[in-house]
Amino acid sequence: MRRLHVVFVILGLMVLGLAPFGAALASLWGEGELLVETLRTPRIGSLLAGTVALGLATASASALIGVPVAWWVTRRRGWLVAAAGALVPLPLVLPP
Image (cartoon, rainbow, N blue to C red; front, side, top):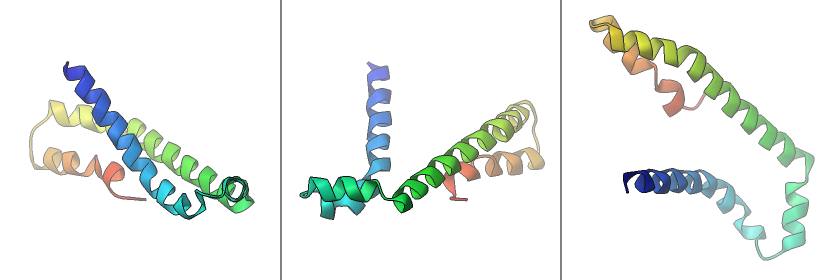
């Protein structure tokens, strides 16, 4: 039963992430052809590609740097460890 809650939370966060995209395209919703034309413009394509590239870069950096630092933080104690533990999740919270 608990796993079902996790699935709903993940789905809710995914929908929440799509909300700004949907809000930007809401004015075009009634006109299907205009919506498709707008999505196929080179500018929108480059914006989507940049967004995907930024997401991949952030996820890669978090995985390559954050995981070893998080492992180190769990094995040590002290003020430096506390500072590192506070800085590790910042790329996920703050936009680049």
